[in-house]
Image (cartoon, rainbow, N blue to C red):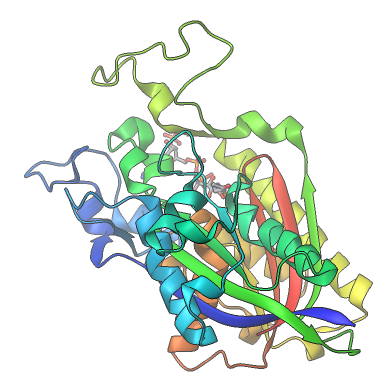
Amino acid sequence: MIRTKILGLGSYVPDRVVKNEEIAFLNDQHVRQETQQSETTDEWIQRRTGITERRYVPNESGLATSDLALQASKRALLDANLEPQDIDCIILGTLSPDLHFPGTAVFLQDKLGIASRGCACFDIRQQCSGFVYGLQMADAFIRTGMYKRILLVGAELHSHSLDFTTRGRDVMILFGDGAGAMVLGPMESDDPKSGVMYTSAHADGSGAMSLYLKIFDIAKLPYLQYDPRNREENQPMYPYMDGKRVFLNAVRGMVMSTNTALEKTGLTWDDINWFVPHQANLRINEKVAEVAKIPPEKILNSIQFYGNTTAATVPLTIDHWRQQGKVKRGDRILSSVFGSGFTWGATIFTL
Ligand code: ACO
């Protein structure tokens, strides 16, 4: 029977580290000012979120989301011992695309130097759940024989769309830039526990307006109705979040999908090496661990170092801890995610 194997894993974060102490002094060009630009503190950020620092693309670097995706993809391909031309499908999850259209996967394909080969390119829009949704898609494609070498990427360039005033502080302190990628392919195996063992994907659209970034409203004519340089008018440029509602639903969705993953596969925590939750807030993950009774020594977080990198958090966290020597090839990972939409899901796979 054909099952899906993880052939390679890679991640990338830009070099610029923005610590909590610095973020309050940044202006909207990410330049440190002498006076504080927003009312926030290292103490508040760490206590409420667990974040100590995040990465931003360098000022005036001209980098786009597809450039971060490119670096993570190159590393995943190297890890898989494959070349870009071996890829026959790209699935890219992001909430910070290069442009409104076309999708970011085609920019990545071109930057990988394989545009002339014409492989399939999908953009998916499931925000923080993008990695699990993408893995479910990739797994289905591989099991049916539709594609043989899939590049699955989560990439985000958040730092350009944050509000660095006190108005935006609740969201601004959470997000960082980064990318994670996996290369997936088929293997012959009758062991139901091998490779990608399980995926689930869910959504509840009634939560859509609890966490969104408008930029435009296509129901309006004209569809942009603000002056981006006017601070009072330009709110649609920045994310809106009902933090408490997102928090409660995230805990519920991640606990539910984690427990269901174990029930459906018949596994217990003894069979799982690592639990890798989406990285939105350390307090969310602590609550999920408490309610779902997850052994604390099996939980991997990376939000302390990278903030929330949305579609990239799961592969980025796994790769971070692999580089530290903690995660190894052959480890079984359970991951659960929750994001804007609301969307959520879980997966169990062997690295
Ligand atoms: N610094 C200092 N004070 C702040 C900051 C800040 N950065 N942000 C908010 N505050 C203030 C608030 O204004 C409020 O002040 P008030 O009491 O005078 O009104 C006070 O701190 C408490 O605010 P709360 O919103 O009650 O704080 P809470 O404990 O809920 O933490 C947070 C806010 C961190 C945003 C939390 O709600 C959260 O993490 N929610 C979930 C976020 C999340 O998961 N987002 C990503 C989803 S994934 C995706 O798809 C993108």
